[in-house]
Length: 140
Image (cartoon, rainbow, N blue to C red):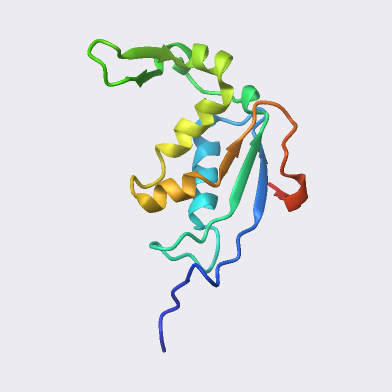
C-alpha cells in the first residue's frame, strides 16, 4: 500500500464564496485559511497547493469581540527611519475593510513561498458584488 501524494498537475481547484456579514473575524479567518490550504479536502498534502480560490464579500460587515475595535493595532513601516505607523482596527476597517480580513488570513498561513501562493488565491471585496461570477463559485 502506498501513501497518496497530491501533485499540482492533478489538483482540481474550485471557487468558494464566503459572506462575511455578521461573522466574527478570527473564526471566519480560520475557515478561509483552511480552505486556501486545502485542509477541507481528502487529498490534502502539506507541501502542495491543493486549496480552492476564496472570494469574500461584505468585508465591511465583519464583527469582532471584546474591545478589539480600539485595542487591536496594525503596524506598518516603509523602512525609512522614523516612518512606523500604528493604525487601530476601527480606522483600518473604515478606510480599507478588505485589508482587515486579508491581514488576518495572512497571519494564519505559512510564511513560505507556498503560503504566499495560497494567499494569492484570496479575493476580498468590501461590498456584495464581485467580478468572479464566471467561475461559478459555490457558497458557504
